[in-house]
Amino acid sequence: MKESYVDVINIRRMVFSEIARLAYEDGDLTKLGDSTYALLPGERATYRESIFRERAVVGERLRLALGLDVRSAANMGPIEEGIDKINLDYRVYEPPLVNVIPFACEACPTKTVWVTNNCRKCLAHPCTNVCPTNAVSIEKNAAFIHQDKCIKCGKCISACPYAAITQYERPCAAGCGVNAIGSDELGRAKIFHDKCVSCGRCIQECPFGAIADKSEIYQLIKSIKSGKEVYGIIAPSFVGQFGALTSPSQVVEAIKELGITEVVEVSLGADITTVNEAKEFIEEVPEHRPYMGTSCCSSWSSMVKKFYPDQYQYISDSSSPMVYAAQYVKRNNPDALVVFIGPCISKKLEALEENVAEYVDFVISFEELMGMFIAKDIEPSEIQVDEEIQDASVTGRGYAIATGVASAVEAMIKELDPDKKIEIESANGLHDCVKLMKQAKAGKKNGCLIEGMACEGGCIGGPGTLTSLSRARKSVTKFSNESIYKTPSENDKIQSKK
Amino acid sequence: MKLEICVGSKCTMFGADHIIQSVEDLQETVLKDMEIAEGFELEVSLVKCNNRCKDEGDVYPKVFIDGEVINNAHSQMVMARILEAARKE
Image (cartoon, rainbow over all chains, first blue to last red; front, side, top):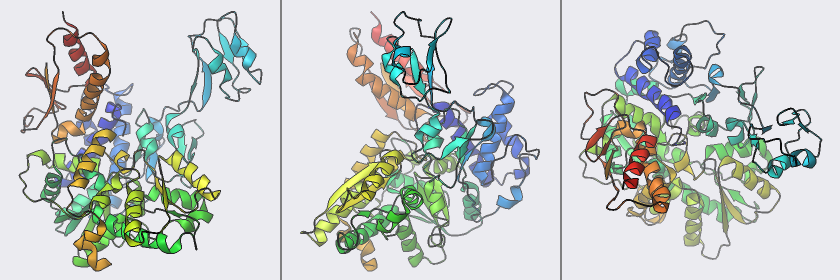
């Protein structure tokens, strides 16, 4: 998340803690409208131009957090419509995952080159002289760009001595690595769900907080409350996310205080992935496949499947760490439910996939988990805990940071087959992932193991995180080095899987 | 100047992170390049929750500047206070 977007982030997060509170306190969902007043009391607007609009937008966010679909301003129904469909203690999640709240969207202009009022109508007017389509004219008070002629080449921008010409883009669309955002009939952002890979970048980019994802918090809490045995599997990027002075063991203990039976590190699954991908690479590349791509980032996989379908066969057949960790839990506890806790929103969709749904019952993000702690008045940093968690190796824990996966697999390959030729390449951020795939398709990455991370910085930069990249990186690295297992080979917890 | 930033769960959820980020950034950029008043030293520490805000309502994030409690702190105000103190003659 963009830390500097404090108000947008606050709106998003207060919705999570409110939904968690409603679930824990058995709140009457038919009175959901009351929550919009609880979150935004009084008569004066805090965030938008009118308190009515503010409450309406928060209302839609509350609905999304419950798992309901977003509605338009034309919808006449009360805020609690459809509540019966989701007031359940099991997952009832339906795409689309990422949604634009139409009446929260300000219909920001799409890519435009624009003369600002910094223009001094100078005698030289180089802007007119450099324009290849004759789109710039000098009007009464300033230069003017005729948008129908403008090809957005940017020459006038560089030519202007006063930096008076600027180019701006719609933040959500500019952030989208697969160009999945267009406009609806009113010029508002519209997500093309056939293209969208649910990375959540647009959610982080929108300065008006108009885009949100659906959550499973409510159903998860109801499930725990109904007495079901729920196990948590927590992604390697969790370290340092729940308060700068909260230790990893305290996080695990805090999760147990929520009524979750036990917590296992997803890094354990990562260790299994490392071994499998290493073996796969050794066998497949280059004899059967020119290169191999990692498969742990579901937005990356999704992007390859949708946009480079002929290359999808070169992505590893290995399941993601989330799946292996969930299988590990269910093997030892067949009746347990599993909730994946991660930085990710994309995993919410991965968990619905045919081979995954039976293992992963719920997915929540760190923000959503923190909302649960707050609703239950749990303060992780104050918990007394003595045990250390030791489920995974140094390299498994390193999956959270960009290049971590590729490095782990490379190290494993060197262990298993020291003479194997391998080069690794990593991309983070969906734009770079697309570039990397283009090069791989063009045959420029043969012999390589390519790692794609849709979020910048890797998983620690995911949309569900609470901490800055630099601090998260430090925390994850420190925790990695605290593992008693230097490599997956030393991890006795996964030995039976081999 | 002693700046303590609470990093309890509510403070972390609602903005403490950005305050920490901003102050660290300030120390590495603006404070490094400007003329600091004699005797000014900025000591930044992260403090635990201690359930301080239990009955106080929505007061997060909390920071303490030389012991003074600041509720609903935001980064621009904290940075301005630091610079003001750093500039004093």
